[in-house]
Amino acid sequence: MNQDLKKYLKVGGILCAIGAVSAILITCTNLLTAPKIAANEAEKKAAGFRSVYENTASVGDDVTVNGHYVSLSNVCYSDAGKTTEIGTVYTASGSYKHVSGMKILIGVSGDKKAPVLGKVYLLKNGATGGYDATVKNNYVDKYNANPSLTTMNNVTCGATEAATIIRTMSSKTITPPTSSSMAAPRASYLAITRTVRKKMARPKSPSMARMAGI
Image 1 (cartoon, one colour):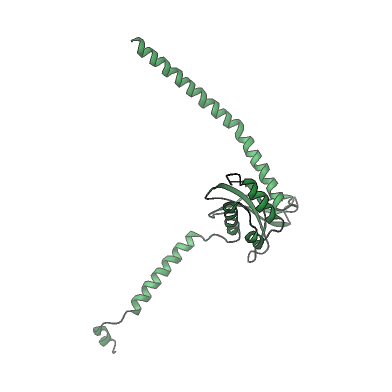
Image 2 (spheres, rainbow, N blue to C red; image 1 turned 90 degrees about the vertical axis):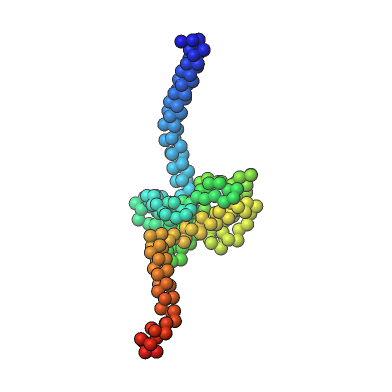
């Protein structure tokens, strides 16, 4: 074995060892930090529930929502025994133009036929270019002073793109998503019905007309 080959093998072995040690360190770091990150996120979300509904004493389990923007819902209660419901808090996330991965909590209360929008809480402010403070101070805070669908549509700020995605996500909390399993069969049914009607509406041929006594 020549000296050059030995040199290359030695360098390769060192690089492999460094790579293995780095992988172990990264894995250990993730194992140590993941629980802390999860705890911080849970704490922030708990604070968000209390921000949306100030008298929140307990929160129901996560309920998955199959929406385009909305992913979870949680019922908030004013008592520890979860007997007095205040409203539902939805978790929604979305992006729009320069706004990337914005994540919010928004409350919805009242009757399902006439839902009432509650306050908004920013879990993650996805606004960029220095507009993160603008969207919070000039839009979310102003909206939260008098939360309603009317207020949300009327409040203006310098962060138009962020305001747009917040409005869009919030609107989805009061408009239940259509079940694709129901929509597809209905669309198919309507298509078949239109085809049958067209065939029935076609003029009869002379031979068919004579057979029908026309």
